[in-house]
Image: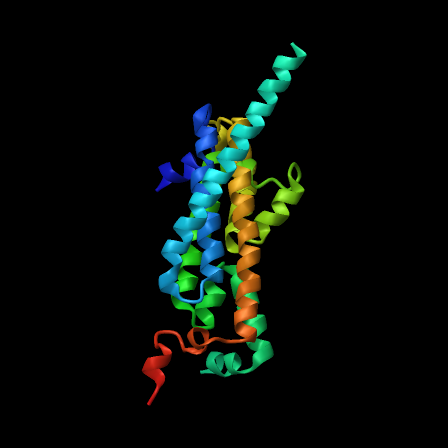
Length: 79
Length: 153
């Protein structure tokens, strides 16, 4: 019982690609809560959540890649 | 008996749904009869909030002095935010417990975002519970444990 509690005291080291990957479970939580409040029927929730989750993840990564490309182009121009 | 009589009064029903939703996100939905939704919301908020605390460490994630606006968001998660705050204060007061703490600021930021977003989602849950309590649907008007079809004679 003590071990899990003391494990929560310190932070976990997250670096590199894992920082970007942390978006995936967070966006699942957002999709789950949003669709649970919006869907009329409870049975519609799973499919709606998957759809919104994929939209958020793909959309956010697309925005990230676009921003990175713009940054790289600006770096090329200024070099 | 007294609780069911209280839930029959519209204003009390709205207040109780809002307060329970703040205290334990999802509990307001359970109280007004949306049991499945309430359990989904309860589990999602608890997992998201405590994942954030596990990533950033309890002593750095819930920090009203350093991150006041994030702390406000975290307090919307009710008992989760209050428990994490109380625990972080307790951990700060006990220096022995901090020996193994290894603050990594990138991780702390991720943890703060997780727990803060869990709090903001709780705000959405509170508003939804109030809306459902104010205009109860067929699902919400069913008492806990019995569906509307079961209640029909």
